[in-house]
Length: 486
Image (cartoon, rainbow, N blue to C red):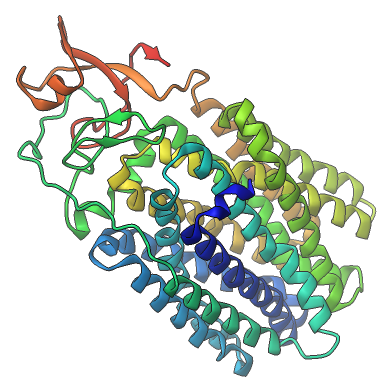
């Protein structure tokens, strides 16, 4: 897995991601303690609201940024966003009112909402080979796990010598270091978008290929053909990623799994501080330890997954992991029925981290298989926005319900949400999910370049051919009936 670090550009980008996320992890711990310092036993409600505001920023801003991302050099954009996040972080230690927390969290997360999908869309251009990209996804997952493992451990150590407000200074330092590392990279130039003479392409009866305006290479390295996104410009491209998710069965399943992950993650992030400090009567350092258990489970799975994914498909890993989440909720509910338990909390949080990692680590592979190369920024931004729509539901649910009805009721409600998401994914994701699909075009003229290049042959329904299949201008719908081919 470490072989991808031989690429200097990826090595610097990965280091930038690590230091930024370590800083973000410090902010997560500090924000929990700040909420407890301001609101006491109502900290869950404050955190739930603050994190819901964070999700509003993610959902609203990420698609718009994806639409303009190809008009601004990616390196310049990422550096500017890192410095913006650093500036906001250094003001958080001076917060004394709940409304100030809400305003600053929105500003901080608005910058993150622009940074993350831009960063995600850059990695496939740096590591175009499927095998390298798979390992980069696991490396990226490990970096995210540092936010919930190393950062809480570091926070616990720092809390012995400084107050929690100083953790926000560490957050700012992480963002500044990330900006410096991004500046040191030379990123590949993104291919210009070509506007084909056939851009108006009369769609066939619901079929797909790739590349916006030109032929290109699909996620598997195979040649793909097509017209790319439905619209051009900011208002055309911003909703394209959402339509891509809705039209592609495996991506609809990914969104359902994101809901299950959000239910588990909200329970951990929102309610840990109240469970540890109020119900168990433990120290601020133990809040970091509990969050670290979640990160430990996630990191263990991320280390093991590359070899597993070399042998089995994404579906065989992600669906069982999604079904494991409501099972962990149920086990935790049974074990704590007679009262809160420190070992039960650590075990459940570890299991939540492991299952969430098994769902999230391969997600980039699914997106890469399901979008044309030129449409990857829109696809990753849509994933970012739609996944965080799930968190927008579960964060306030976890916080407000815990304050109103207690932790036991909150746990069972979130278990039901996780079960609904996991079952929806099982029903939505086709068992035979091949990249190449045989499909018909009924609305294209026989001399259309797409038909010629993909070697279509005439049938009673128009023209049939096969190629790696993604939603694009010529193929706006997933075919209802088709013959799958490997």
